[in-house]
Length: 336
Image 1 (cartoon, rainbow, N blue to C red):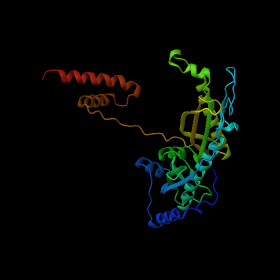
Image 2 (tube, rainbow, N blue to C red; image 1 turned 135 degrees about the vertical axis):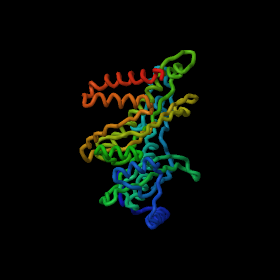
Image 3 (cartoon, helix red, strand yellow; image 1 turned 180 degrees about the horizontal axis):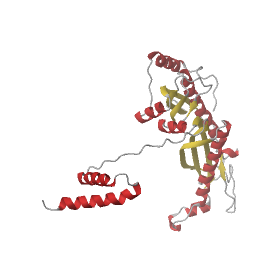
Image 4 (tube, rainbow, N blue to C red; image 1 turned 90 degrees about the vertical axis):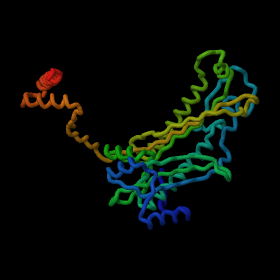
């Protein structure tokens, strides 16, 4: 997830907005009060809200054939049924669409990072990635977050990006870990609805597992996770904290067998790659907390017990204090 020429190449409207923010001396953000105080506690401050977008036309998504019957055929019931995933390169898979989704998201994230660099930020927290139809045609990919900076810190070659909240970001810094960048894992799987799958999905068979659907979602999830981990290794991070996993399942007309259908599963995993920069700080020992009872009888009994016990050990004080409380309660119940 690298970017070249951060801070340059922004659209004219974005450059004007960055100049206006810097000239005003103020900043905007999508942070809550809790997030703002959390990042301040670890030495950071908001630099401004940043945004990136890309509109793509998906001309050829792939999936032009059936994973079992190809583009047509009269195979019988003994035909093996396969689940094809986008990473396989098969014409039945949706590899071209997945590649376009990676490219579009990367462009949106890079443009958001460029705005962060233009504001003198060191990174972005609370990034939200959205996708939606564009009115003029195509699909719009959007990335929006809050740029933050450490006052007095040196300029980074590439600002970090993260979908972590302000509180989670502060916890990472306190643990000696820093966000590296957003990482993605996307996969689309497709499987033909064969006679066994159709039979298992009828209500007359009772409560049984639909093996074909199980294989479809499991293989697609595994492929998305593999792609995510490849993204983590590309940025030389130590690991990833996954914030979001989405699964969408649909069906379409089978391209190889008229009247039949193929089921399609799409899995998207989004997380923040992280790397350790320092040893974890030992947790500070908290001071003891004094608790004052609101019951006057308990307070009276406690004072009496402590006065009588003097410097007795704590282990011996507990039963004596209990006795003092009982004596005090009995004395209060005696008639005056």
